[in-house]
Image 1: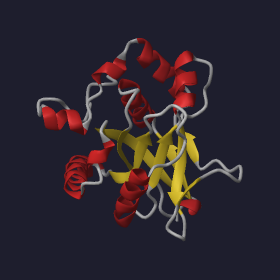
Image 2: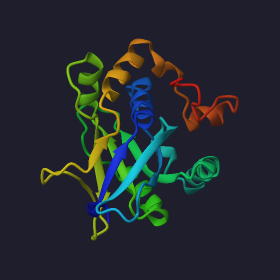
Image 3: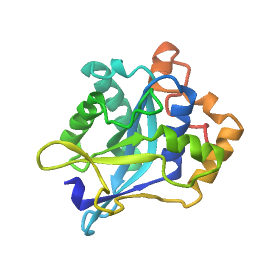
Image 4: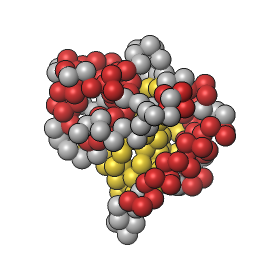
Length: 208
């Protein structure tokens, strides 16, 4: 179904996932993407990704279904009132040169796909992220993966199409500004919240 769909990534979601990766440069990080199907009648359909919820900087935790289900339930309960739901997952590999979508990302993507058949998986490109932080690139730092009819996760856009769009053109400039002010130090993920429940896993004041 992903082939029939386009994805629009809001600035808040994009900046949060990038700052999450920058906070833990030596670790793999991941989180959930929250949004909605913008117009079900449109062709192609558009999934609007409004926000990101950082989950973990220890992704070996995530294959544990109870932990994932707890996170999904909390996220769904919070965002439901806004008409939003979990529409995907993001992942950043620990190694700078690792550009492969790992098995854990595929497993979590499969799980979300059961609830939202147009689910997206975003893999962060560590090299591009470095370039954006330095101000030498304005390219998106994520690669889009969608699930095809054979139930495999494949990178979109290999045929030259652009299924993923940054909603605000200045998003990378804003990201670079937040890096300059070391905003990444304030990112809280679900792991942090489980260690200290006073920490806000929603990061409500992060980009304010």
